[in-house]
Length: 191
Image (cartoon, rainbow, N blue to C red; front, side, top):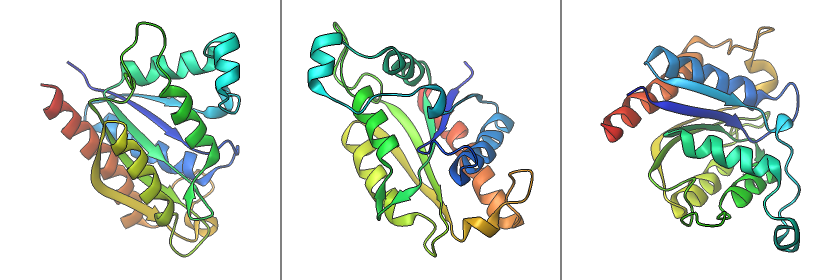
């Protein structure tokens, strides 16, 4: 069975450092034999989570689409920008919506028994590392096995070339290897 990995960034900005970063990791996962689907939250706009909205209208169409993607993939490559030392509101909102069960669906069906790898890129000196602590905590608390390996790229304005690749060979290899490792471990866990 070919492992399926969903890759996404917690950023909507067109030229997002984190979108570039997760695509490098996705290349590593593909090279290790995984089937990778990249999703851009700009293509799946979700309203701010509101229980009244959910009660009145049910889950929004984009939430249903995102949940379906999460359920059909065994692993997640997640690049998260750091907002005020924490998770981006876009990523948190997507997780909150996806955690809501549809009728006849087990609680946290999108997250239980999944495996993930985290990464971040930020203009700051810590590269988004503080935010990854919060992402890790949230995901682990909802049933995702988050691998200990992670990478934060600091000074992101200077870190990428014109093609969206990391200039530094070691950083590029480290991110690529995160994707590869996720594919290998998810394969072992599913077989």
